[in-house]
Image (cartoon, rainbow over all chains, first blue to last red):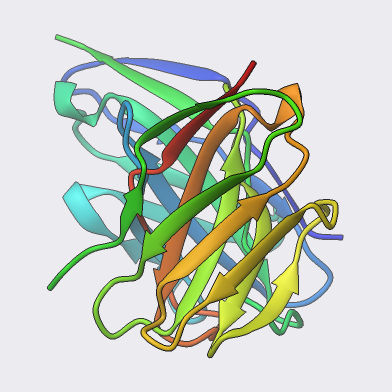
Amino acid sequence: AQSVAQPEDQVNVAEGNPLTVKCTYSVSGNPYLFWYVQYPNRGLQFLLKYITGDNLVKGSYGFEAEFNKSQTSFHLKKPSALVSDSALYFCAVRESSSSASKIIFGSGTRLSIRP
Amino acid sequence: ETGVTQSPTHLIKTRGQQVTLRCSSQSGHNTVSWYQQALGQGPQFIFQYYREEENGRGNFPPRFSGLQFPNYSSELNVNALELDDSALYLCASSLGHSYNSPLHFGNGTRLTVT
């Protein structure tokens, strides 16, 4: 069965510093990977996805993610954090063999950027 | 372009009652998925509808049911409510049920069961 793990409940970073939010996955086929962000009392917003091709994927708001097949990881990164990046971040995976768009989400990582 | 809208935004029900949540998909999207997000957890897949047919289901009991209408809007119905059903219910639409179509979420309905 497919699964996603986000090992850190919270990540604290100073504004202007680089940030990394970790994600590892487990699927039996080819993985399709996503990152979403959730602001308070709102739904999830799509940030970026990896389907195939370059291992470094660029997304919205200056975020990027690095796909590493050997480590089964898909870490979210940003070179310079902003206070407005503070939110809840979810990694998600969809197995290629699934006929429906059933996407499995991780438990989330709360990102806190201090001024 | 109109985004995904959900109604109501908040709802309080009593254990044993029934509830209907509604969702209008983003313009041009023909697939709707429903997720349950308990406090402090990631969203859990309930089911998906594509062209008015259920196209996949997660580990939720039959008292969770749904509909999709010809205009691609959708309803989630929950019968015999239990306290553990208290959660944020998220609707998401996408174009087709292709594996690489990102989901576009509404802001959710916060259901409280007392």
